[in-house]
Length: 115
Length: 112
Image 1 (cartoon, one colour):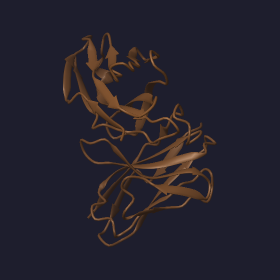
Image 2 (cartoon, chains in turn purple, orange; image 1 turned 30 degrees about the horizontal axis):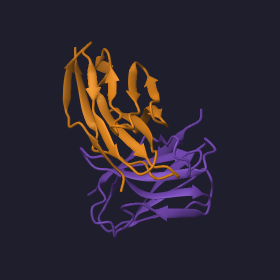
Image 3 (cartoon, helix red, strand yellow; image 1 turned 60 degrees about the vertical axis):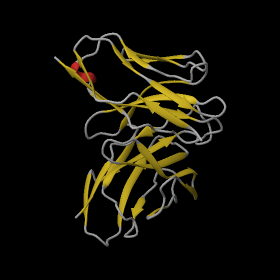
Image 4 (cartoon, chains in turn purple, green; image 1 turned 135 degrees about the vertical axis):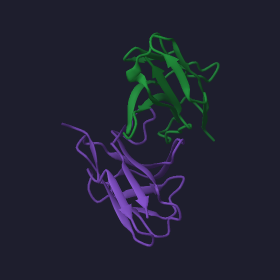
């Protein structure tokens, strides 16, 4: 089955710890994205990557880091510098990042809770 | 910059009622327009999309028409089911591959 997988589904972290969220896709998509969703709100873009070995900051990149060493993988690290990391994190991918008609497909999400 | 305004929820309907969720947007150029649906605890699923003026997107009984003159993309369904209970997001995407812009979403609750 083709799709986007995110792991783990639930993640708990102590304050001051870094944590890495996994995102893998087997759709052969060039572009990948990370969004954050807070209760009752829409999605906000954290980082995106239109091609391997390249990525750009989104609207709320502070306290986060990413890498794109492989086409199918786009891990997100939530660092201790992120002041309020408890949220639902969604990864997405699309065939071509620069085409407006291109559809973004989403993974099932990871719910991060800071204890 | 680009923005989107959605009808505030929650919207509560009885089964088989008619649904409209309003969406208006501001964007430069000719954005593509998307509706996504999110079921509790899950990621977003594409519901439908339209990529140029007067296009109608449709899927699973839902429809939305790209109205450039009113910058709107209202979601409609003739007869909702309990299984349609979810949060719906309207999301324009600017031309030249701009990012998706999400509103706060509209929660729909359908009662039997």
